[in-house]
Image 1: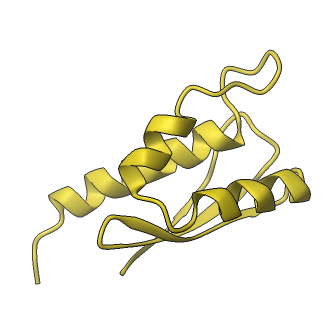
Image 2 (image 1 turned 90 degrees about the horizontal axis):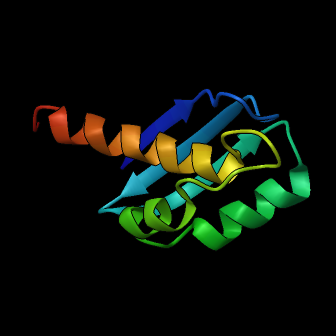
Length: 90
């Protein structure tokens, strides 16, 4: 399992914690921000393939912001996938 803490930019949330196993988002959680929305987002995304979560959430905007919590989750997953792909195998 790969775990990561991501610091989102341009949104109310201050951290996103992720866990991915075998290409599936196993666990996601936001710190701060809109508690109900972030919990709902995580419950809908958990258990889905990472590529699907990225595809569905990337580019979503919150009001006049250029990003949103869903978009930041997608960006965090992209960063995680890129890091896993470049990590040496043990």
